[in-house]
Length: 317
Image 1: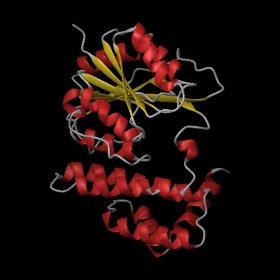
Image 2: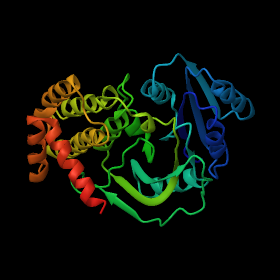
Image 3: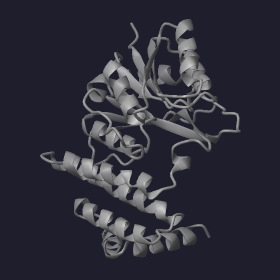
């Protein structure tokens, strides 16, 4: 009997795309899956579309809830999931037809608790091509100190049940919550594989979460993830602490990158400085360059942002 795979899809205002997403799952070569669609308070026809698909295929289960955010929707999926393996897909994205077949086979054959795989983004107007998957080079890590292929976004990972049942998403957070979740999951894995082949297609459009990252209050969610990850390292071994600290460093850089195109104004500068100084003691990095940059930001975030802009400008020439 093939291992059951749970696919969790949070759905919110996705009437334009959710059909394409579901169709890509129905088209899978691998048949032993359950699809959990969490309609997170959509006011468009998303919920009705999900219900219609559930009628035609009993492997599809739809749950409707008041709008609580993507983290709450994914947590509901985690609680309900029955699969030996689990994968997250967003309602506006899709899977390559052979995704589940290849991923489960590779995970089983190599006894992997987590299998990370490639993601390809495409513009909404473009027709996604799902035939060229790239090479099947597999790198296996038994030691977190060697793992350096961390991938942003919770999509792009096949998680075994003994991993995905250990953690949940921080609710009420829309940005960086997936980085926190997958970082914690990875710390539980004693055998993680990174596959070069692409099986996930990320749709870029004007309504996507990252395209609508415009306010400081949104990007400040990074600081919640940083605090949570720093707290998570309490009583952990050195290997886990070092790995989590590397992800915290990346989150800090991601936080600052927002200001390259969004210059802090007026009283906001004071708030940003105070917010950053509150998480500064939580940052630990082996890079002298990063330490110097973060120290300069402690004096005033605008100093570090100016250096970032200079670096980006020079890199583009």
